[in-house]
Length: 244
Image (tube, rainbow, N blue to C red; front, side, top):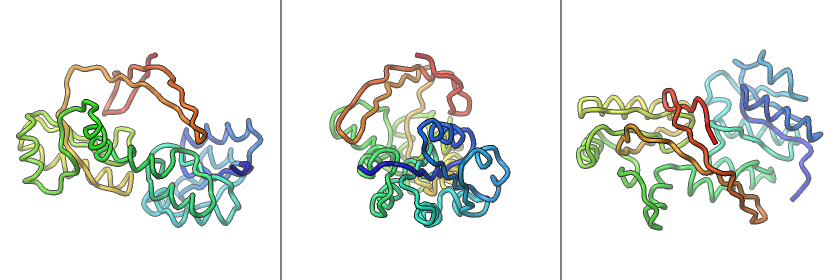
């Protein structure tokens, strides 16, 4: 693997600032790709170099793969750090980075396609016998399909974006009358945030704990568990605190 001397950061806000700080600590040149709306933000000031990749709309800047790749190649970056959200779980983007000789700081495109798409991940877990919450076997494509699936599993249900994360693209429906709006709102929010409006439906579980076990692996086959964390304290499907 080639040495990383220059990293293009395709994100904004606190995660961009944290990546820039890490680059500085490692003696790596940070290049921030930003939208015109973020021109006067702290990460732009912090970065060693910066480049505007498009207008405020995420689908024309942070989610627009040609602009991100063009900036990375034009500024001779060795690697691209997607942060979280936006293109971080986009298998196509990771594959294009690989094809263009750019190190994608994250999972391989194959791993992202297996696990980044939550509907596909559910299908894989079901196939290998891992218990999952009751839900649709894949994406839902019509109001009729949504109503039938929700009726089979029982209300309340949770409509979830297949792509991305961070609590975006999620809506609950307590009754059939609420389902159509929940599907539409979740799909539109996901499309704007992640570039994909695909959604699926799960049974909504009330009064439960959200417990995660974090796993980290590298390209050389080393795998470690970072322990469990309880992420039950949430607001609008976003974690407020993680306890371990």
